[in-house]
Length: 91
View 1 (cartoon, rainbow, N blue to C red):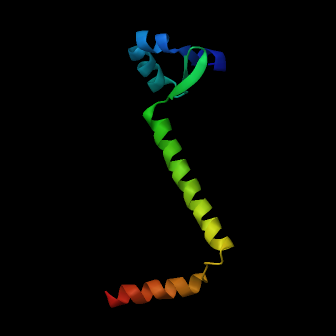
View 2: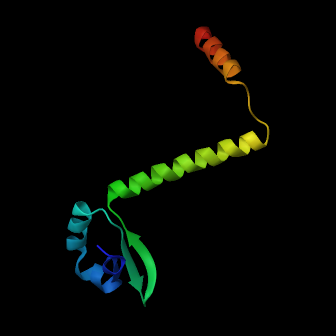
View 3: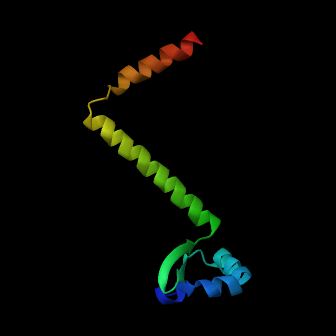
């Protein structure tokens, strides 16, 4: 489906909601909803949305890790593993 076919006015969403949901199940491509000619919302299937959320969470963790490295808050892996083993044995 071309990009122009994935852009619909809000009136189309209102009139074809059930059809849109069926189509999202078959073709997991986002549908862009416009209002007064301006893009206002994106409709996705749930699997695509969940994958986007997971990707965003991973990117946030990577960014946090990079900030910690830049701040010098790092330890050798061997030291961390030894501390975790000691903690596990203490339990």
